[in-house]
Image (cartoon, rainbow, N blue to C red):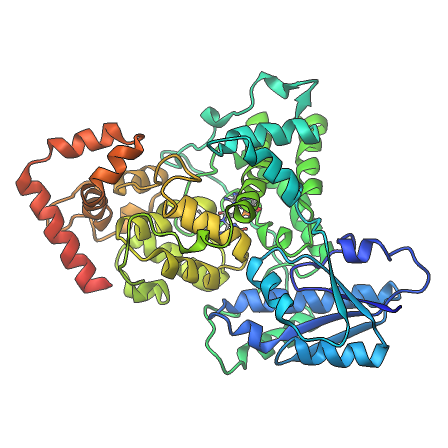
Length: 503
Ligand SMILES: Cc1cc2nc3c(=O)[nH]c(=O)nc-3n(C[C@H](O)[C@H](O)[C@H](O)COP(=O)(O)OP(=O)(O)OC[C@H]3O[C@@H](n4cnc5c(N)ncnc54)[C@H](O)[C@@H]3O)c2cc1C
């Protein structure tokens, strides 16, 4: 029996299950990596994402060759043709591939007609297996992230002193999430790279593609190998992690990355493993005495949010992406694809940044982009499609729960306990975007009223009954009750006009 290993573009790790079992053997099995043009046309992907994946695949192929693997690197239209040719040429009787993280790709693999058997091996790029997560979820009525996170801390022994959390508290968020106002913040520069020859070749390929793609191809500054990703991680721990917690939610025009780690593109394709990242942050606490609020806040993102989102993605099943609890039907405005077309400064700043880099930090994604989509009543599936295409780190497993669940509350509260909806007040408090905007963040009814204000109240009014039943918004709904019918009429009119003009 001859085994061959197929490595997917988001499984670029020497320790992934299919490679881990043969890495020490003297005679290495044949491996194949495939750049499929048809796959790249599923949506108008960000050019930087295509460059990242294809360049990282090519670098990984080199690494495999250096480790004596016989590597076939195919650039093709589809997957089936090069797989079939490779199977025949190498007399392969069984293809082994690690279970894809994304459900649609798993389903696609099952439709392949290949001249040999194909075996899926467990995916080890996450800390919780599918079965372990199901065991945790099965026992509860509500899936509280905080409960899941604490279970993760205990299970993996992270930031624990015996059975108690280090420092006595599980969560230090009271000290985190400070607004950027009234301070002269000096943000350390991000750790970027110049493209090498392999990346330059891929940039050329991406620039000459004849199908629709999105965003700028250059400057391309992301890491494309494990070595580069580890440098980004080390730099983050040294320079950014100490302040990560304090300004985790802050947004400053021109400061695209703040103190964030910029590691999601690497974690999501296997160049970094979540456990090594968590352990590196934990070491920084014990060895360098970095502030616990930053360390704990950062670890919670990976051990908590990331695992929770992926666990729920699998657990909640294939219908979850279709959810639309508010029955929102407005189409995605053009300005999501072309930032110049919006005159709201916050949206413009974030969308220009996404166009240029494929990246925005969590609060930009949640409280600017998806908050807008939620209160404007945009169709959740259209919004999900946009996020999926536009971001460098987007994959089905991370998109569905983040956009449909967390961002748009389209699941009716399976994941979040209340919608992340806010008026301009939040954006003004947590950013300086409102300073240079033609709209007035304080105004909700006048000529210069910020659309975040009237759309917000319009959203609450439209969904008053649903939100009442849901329970967590009674304070804000009481304010809605106090509004006069004239005020509500103006809000309705302004919202309709806005949606007519911009959507
Ligand atoms: C609407 C929306 C869309 C999102 N789309 C994506 C996406 O396509 N890909 C993606 O990886 N994350 C996504 N996230 C989660 C989060 O915003 C990004 O992981 C984070 O901004 C990546 O930047 P960073 O590496 O600098 O993160 P940091 O702020 O430095 O956080 C560290 C790490 O924590 C993990 N993390 C934190 N929150 C989440 C979360 N909610 N879900 C999953 N991982 C999390 C990421 O791996 C991240 O790299 C989305 C969130 C929202 C609200």
